[in-house]
Each structure stands twice: as C-alpha cells, then as structure tokens.
Amino acid sequence: MTLKNYPEHFKETLRLAYPVSIAHLGHVMLGFVDSMMVGRVGADSLAAASLVNGLAFLFLVFGLGLSLVLTPLVAIAKGQNDLKQCGIILQNGFWLNTIFSLSLAIIIIIFARGLAYLNQPQAVVEIAIPYAQIIGLSFIPFVIFQSEKQFLEGLSITQPAMYVMLAANVVNVFGNWLLIFGHWGFPALGLEGAGISTFLTRCFQAAALLFYVHKNKRFKPFQPSISLKGLKFNVIKKIANLGFPTGFQHFFEVGAFSFSAVMIGWLGSKSLAAHQIALSLASMSFMITLGITAAGTIRVGRFMGTKDIGNLRRAGFATILLSVISMTVFAFLFIVFRNRLPLFFINDPEVIAMASVLLVIAALFQISDGAQAAGIAVLRGLTDVKIPMILSFVAYWILGLPVGYLLGFVFHLNVNGIWLGFLSGLSFAGMAFVLRFIFKTNPKRFKFE
Image (cartoon, rainbow, N blue to C red; front, top):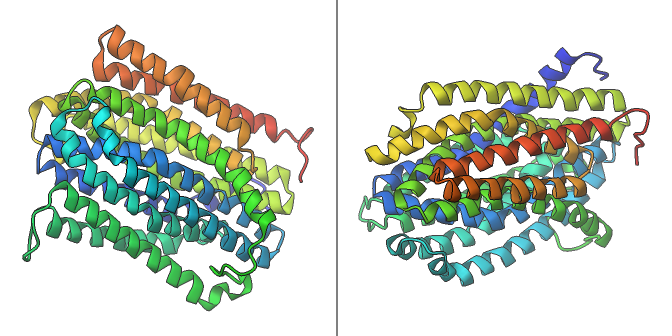
C-alpha cells in the first residue's frame, strides 16, 4: 500500500500505536500500583522503592536496548518479504538477550548491598537491599517477554502484548494484596512482598507470550524458534552492534534520572518520595506516547525494507507530530490536577506539596520529552543508533545533570532545581534527534543499504 498523505499516516500510526500504548501503560501501572500500595506502608518504603527501581532500571536498559533493535530488524526483513529471516532474528536475539539479562541479574544480586554506600537514610537502605535482589532476579523473565514482544511489533502485531500486560496487572495487584499486607495466611512482607509479586508477574508475562508465539500456527511461515541449534554469529553480531549503542543511549537517559534520585535522596525521604510520585505520573504519560513512537519505529523500518524514502519521511514526521500533540495534552492535565494527583499515592501534606510543584515542571518538559522519544524511535527505525547515543550522553550528562546539581544545591532550589535539569537535557535531546532525522532522510543524500 502506498501512503501519499499525512492523514493516512496518522491513521496507520495510531492503529499500531494504541495497543502498544496500552501495553506500556500497563507496564507503568505495575509500578504505579506498587507505589500506591507500598506508600500505604510508609514514606521509607516508598523512598526505597524509588531508589531501587531507578538504579535497577539503569542496568535493565541494556537488556532493553538489545531487545528493542529486534523490532526494526524484523520490520525491515518483513518489508523485504524475507519471512524466514524474521524468525532467525528472533532466535538469535532471544538467546543474546536472555544470557545478557542473566549476567545483569547476578550483578544486581551480588552488589545490592552497595546501596549502603550511597549516603541514603539507614531506614531506607535496610528494606531496599532484599527488594533490589528480588527485582534483579526478575530481569530474566522480563527480558524474555521483551524479546517476544519486539518480534511481534516488528511484524506489526501489537495486540497480544497488550492483553498480556492487562492480565499481568491483575496478577500483580493480587500478589501485592497477598504479600505486602498479608492476607489468606501469607505474612505481611511490606516492600519485599511487592518485589516477590513483581517477579511472579514477570514470569507470567514471559510464559504467556512464549506460548502465544511458539505454539500459534499463524507464525509458522516465520519459523520462530528458541532452540540453540542454528544460531548465526553474523546475526548475533548485528543485533549486538545495534543493541549495545541503543542500550547505552537508554543508559545515559535513565542513568541521569537514576543519579538524580540519588541526589534527591541527599535531601531526605520526603523529597525522594515526592520525586517518585511525580516521576510515576510523568512515566504514565511517557509510556502512552511510547506507543506512538514504537509505531514510528515499525513503520520507518518497514519503508526501509521496501526502499520508499518518501513514505519513510512522512511516517517519521507523523510520529513526531503525534507524540508532541499527545504530550501537550498531558502537560495541561498535570498543571490542572497538580494538587490532586499526589493524593493517589500518599497522605503526607509535605510530600504532596513538593510533588505538586514537580508536576508543574514535568508539564513543562512534556513536549521536549515527546519530541526526543519520537526522534530516537524513528532514528532506530533507520538503524541509526551510534550518533544518537553520543547525543544522549551530551544531553543528559553534559547538560542535564550539571544544570540540575547547580540549580539544586548551589542555588538551593533543592528537588525543584534537579527537575529543571531534566527540562534542559530533554529539550536538547528533542531538538537534536529531530534535526538528525531531517538530515539523515534528506532524499538528495539518503541511500538504502
């Protein structure tokens, strides 16, 4: 099908995007519900969850980077009508991702006690260590789920992962109810119970999607396999060459937010709890927009496969525009409901007051966040990952973090200053990624591989 105008591009992008958005929202809802339920235990537990989840995701993004590149590679192969290659990419990506996630889990489990050296409140550290070890173990089923999910998205099949994520939320809420508060004879484990529930939920996600992909006759033409036989070094190398820069790009972004959480921890448990609340809400809007950006990766990759530069550019620009529009809507909602949204998490008036101010700052960077997410996604569809990795480092570590530290501690704006650092880094990233896509896809210089 040849798409000649933007309305058709918008329609097709949204068709692919809404299940991915719901799936991403379902993923964030897992953390959102954990924060709500753990917040009822106390501010220390909520602060510990914020600290661990930020630092753990800092490691997990490498596994995510390796899985995310499966989507454009599968989309390009499908665009070339090479169905067998789609299955080969899945098989090799599955094992590369699984082995790498196992190594990450071991690192987290061994070095969890290092949390004691981050100058955090002692009460927070004591409950954070066992929680961190359980979350580290849950990396393995999570990355398995991601590998299967990215394969499906590369084929433009986005609904199965959505259904799995919706079911996973039911599993997680029930597990939290049993293990955090102690019902039906189970002990009240608090934050540790939330960690066990997360692990079991991620095992459910992995098992469900593995069964769907590998037992469904619909995928027989692609010959999907998780066998160790027939692994191809050249395919593994290609996935690694694209995946590790992608992982580093996410590491630089997530790492900046994680290190900011450490700095906010220096200001006390209440500041860290307010940060967790505002970040959880901002993550919800971001995850919905990620559905649009994921659709952009799929469609740009598909037009890479069919060698259609005109529709490739239009698909990319449609993705960027839709992302910015959606984030503008959320910016408005954050400002209007800034005093009410924190009430879903905690009843502490001081934490609520701080979180409401952070939501105003979050509203300011929503547009930049939408632009940078869309920009990096459409560049990934081009398999352009190395220069974006460098731009991410500059945006978040050369600009965002130093500005946040300067405003937070030198100019004494505290947690608000650190969040203004987010705003500067995301604004630079948004402009840089969009301009690179415009430059890279100039029809006069673009060449298909």
